Image (tube, rainbow, N blue to C red; front, side):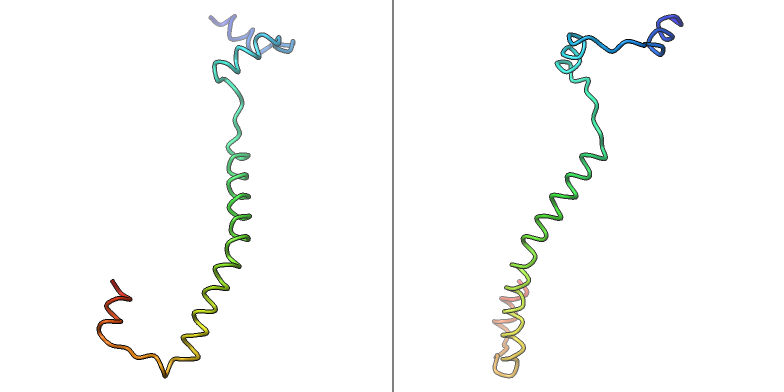
Length: 85
């Protein structure tokens, strides 16, 4: 048993193509959590830069309307209940 472990640690030759293909079929491939995390972070950043300007423009239009017409907007229980429900 000790000899097998020593042999695995002291391998000097590259694995054959068949061994590589067998490992891929079994799912024994190298996975990097850092690469996956980076790709997720990068995609979320790209989506944020794409969506945020659109949503901020819509929000600023609504807020501008509310600020400019603050004295003209009537508030009653029905409107408040529709907002908070």
